[in-house]
Image 1 (cartoon, rainbow, N blue to C red):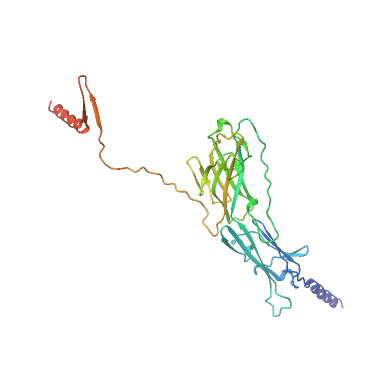
Image 2: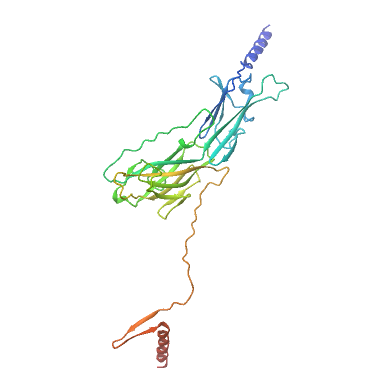
Length: 338
């Protein structure tokens, strides 16, 4: 009697654990984060349990949470095993990521309607980041600019890497200690080295930061007519600008000389603007290489002819180089004879 009761309870528990109330709401929520994609569908879609649904048809990693079945792509990297069949493509300037949640219909018979929730996330690859760099006036000091990091997350398929990018200044060429900006550049510091860089946090390791161009203006408007170009097509515009890293890691760094804009009475700050690309290192070669070939002056062959003017006490006359050379040989011959 005891054994029958245990078996009956086990059967009842299995029935209740393996059934759910079918939900026919065709709804899907997609959260496109810079490193992670989270997808939620209403629980028990068309009678399917969470363990019967696969992300990308590969991973059965869904969890039951607050009336939804939730699936997570923790890292947008194909080398990561948790990528779970997600596909990606690049159509400039947009990155697209595609995946789906499908039901397991490998059994002999299927009593529930098949499920195939397809979803995608799109990310722009080009961003403009700017920052008030320094103040030209040696007398007025400003408090540090407070940046608010806004995460662009929407229900749907659009995300952004923008919230993870920041334009920073550093104390030296090691780029380890950040410097609050805007800061004051004294008159005596004009021409000194300033160290800057664009850094990405929280992105998948497959994405590298590439600086396409950087320029300075005396206004927050990046299209202000007065500009000073620092980096163009990923490379320095002159020998005073040094690009340390570009397209190799989550950070691109460079240094330039402090300067000031002349004849700008009402605008004292210098704003730094950088057009930044997020490069997929799994698809492209991201490091930027600049042409370092030296410029050689073109030399032409030929005979150098020089004309001298020799003056004596009583007269002056002109001799060509050949005449002088002849007279030198003649005098050397006389000396040899003596």
